[in-house]
Amino acid sequence: MKLSHFYCCAVAVTLAALIGCNPVVEVTDNAGVVTLVKNASLSGVNSLTVLCGGSVKNIPLENISEIAISAEDSKTVGGKLFFLATISLQDGNRFESHDKNNNAVTFVAVTDAIAGTAHNGGFTIGLADVAKVKVIKQKT
Image 1 (cartoon, one colour):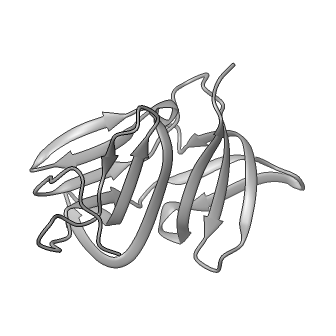
Image 2: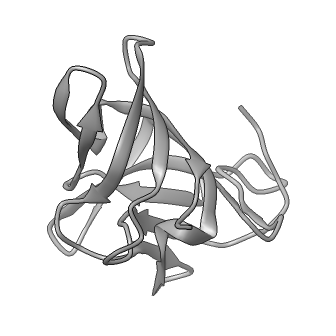
Image 3: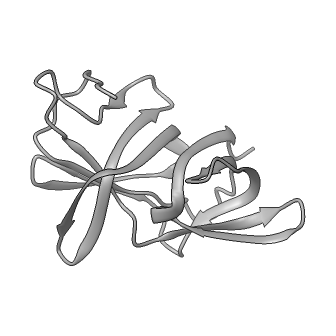
């Protein structure tokens, strides 16, 4: 999938929920199974960590509307594994997976896990097993 809106030389993002944010998210795993997760958080951290052009950014989950993750391309930075990603923010901005020359530029750290409550009880999934996360409801 070629996407180009923000052209970051190297963006890496680690997803996390703000403490007390407790959003409802729709998680699609790599097998295509979709699960609605309430009180979603990310492995006890409170922001999505983004590496852009060699710099690290932290994006709160409440600022994200959707993230798509792909093992199509990966890299290791600081001992953490990152997968190719596209991130859509609530304000309409996007971090695209590829630049205008089809170079992979956006990556998400997949060493963390999304946790919360699903219809049948507790829910936890490692980001390496996630294809997409869509925020359905923000903190009220």
